[in-house]
Every structure is written in C-alpha cells, then in structure tokens.
Image (cartoon, rainbow, N blue to C red):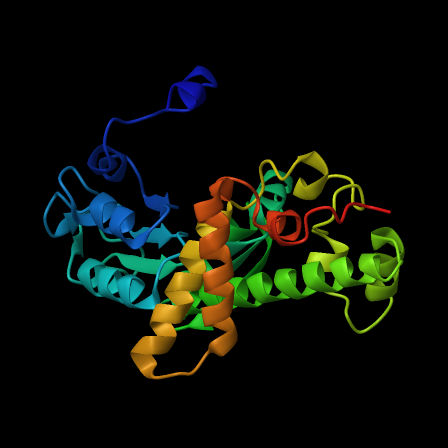
Length: 275
C-alpha cells in the first residue's frame, strides 16, 4: 500500500472501505479462502449488509468454479445503494487472466470471463485497458473453469517440452537448434516459443534469469490441484493431471516453491544446459 500511496494512488485500510469508495472493484488473490475472506470476512467487501455501492465486482483470482458460483449468488442477493442504468442489484464476473507477469507488465493479458453477458460487455473496455484479449466463457464460474483448464494444459505442455529438449540434448542436438525445429513444426507451443525452459535459449524468459520471477511453482501446483479436485467432483478421469500434480508437488517440496514453474526442466534434467 505504501508503494502505491507514494505513487499518488489513493489507498484504503480495508476491503469494506474500498467498496464504500468504488463503483467497480477488482480482486486478484491467491486462493479461494482469501477470496471468501475479502468478500465475506470481517471488514470485507460485503460487510455493509445487502446494500452495496459497487455495481460491478470482478474477481480475477484463479480459484475453483464452485467458489466463483457461490460468490456470484451471494452478490446477487444484495441491492445497489444507487441504481446504475437499469441495474438494481450488483453483478459479479469471474475473470481470471492468462499471460503471467510478463503480459501483466506489457498490458497484453487475456481475460476469460464468466457471468452475465450484459455485465461482460459493459466491463469489456475495462478489461481491454489491462489486456489485449477478453473472451466471454458463459455463466458464472465458467471463467474460473476455463482458467484451470488452461493452466492444466500449460503445465503438461511444459513437462513435455522439457522432457523432449532434455532427450534431444542427450542425443546430441543443442536446445536452441531443437527449439527452432519445434517452433517450425507440430511441437510448437507457448512453452517452446515464448517461455522456453532451457537457460540461455530465450532472452527474457525466467529460465534465463535463474528461474526468478514469472509464475511460481507453488501456484502451478495449486492450480493443478484445483483441476484435479474439479475432475474428481464430476467423476472425470484425468491421469495426466494427476501425474503433473505429483511432479509439481515434489518440485515444491524440494525447495522450488517460489521459482518459476519452468524450473521443472532444471530439477528433473539437471546437467542439461544449453549445448
């Protein structure tokens, strides 16, 4: 708060005070428990009872779809202190993002949004002021569902790219050469062309700065757990999800919680540096 206050940005002491001073509130928090606390806990956004000033509440946290849907129902039971256009009750959107720290800094995030389509269209200019893509995913909770599916695919593709690059190096092909092959062939993906896990191959990627910054491995493990739990809830078999979760859980236990998730390359294929 001091950092932003020093920059001239107004700050408040509690989420409730933020709500009392805002027409739109955006939250982005680590887990479902944090989101519940900020919304419904002591001095939370909804502490004022069923009368709210904000007409729009956007949660960009990566959490389970069930929590997003519960919060949407809770918010829909409130009323607005002042009518907004044709709205008499506040609306909530779940709008997690993709692109990581680099895209956040560059303003090129992708927002995946669940909730009322009317609210989505009203909020679209706000999303596009922070990112370059915004995709409407349907009913409440669908944005959260899209995010955990996206991160599941990202985790598994990072493991596949890491293993393939390590095998290629063992067979005598440099990681930079094999990356060129991947990115000109059917193996091309975000993990190969934008976030390469091998140190020295891609300037600006976390792998080229000792895996500092980026998307923490503990957050990837958390998101994989959300995917695994969601699959369990609906009886869906997801064997690759379970295996990826085991790998990233072990990665965190071995002291890599705060390192970027691409450090899985170094952890499992140590000694395989750029040739």
